[in-house]
Length: 270
Image (cartoon, rainbow, N blue to C red; front, top):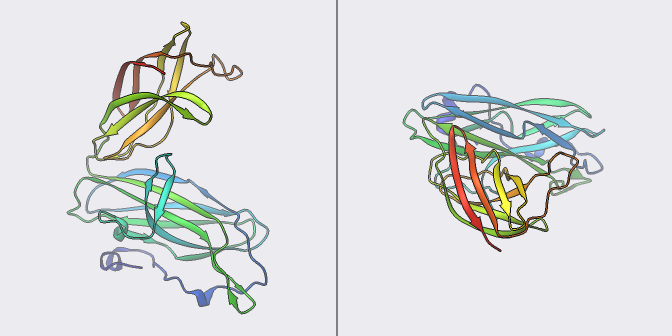
């Protein structure tokens, strides 16, 4: 699991997955784990080592046995992460070191699990993205090796290397069905070298003359992709249901990411 770079740089060992070291309970453990935080978003300079810790909690009354590994990932059309064990052409996973490939946590216990990223001196400005997959470990039932217990947590890492930022453009607008509601959707293209999420509120006026604010979904927009971002109308207060939109809808205002703004002045028909 260790690359030549990591052999000289890691301060802790990356352990190989050894099935012979797994205990042999007489029943399946189940999958009852929580992680904190579920996502890391940070920056690092070329030629340095980034280190961090994720806290893993076993919330069951039995010993928790888990395997951990890295994976590449992308987002599908709905914004869900799709994990891939195969090494992508531009993957930064060879820079990543994990504390252990297999861990055991006492009932209702916690463990601080370390990982690091050794960034080469010559690394170009980019965003290193990978996932740490936490899965139920295979177990022995009698003399038979079972498949891993159903359950997986993907801990997502975004690591900006050098001076990288997102650059967003609004390329299209339409109305789409989102979770059973007909909502305005903006197609946003990211031509930059880092991911981002849109924030803030934009003002809307619908065909009935009703005015309300709309907030963007929090889906990340990855470098090089065009992502559909739904705008959700907000009620006047938390106890007030969001209004139904009567199209066409006029939008005016600005959404933000980082220190930049995306100006909007559009009309969205049915």
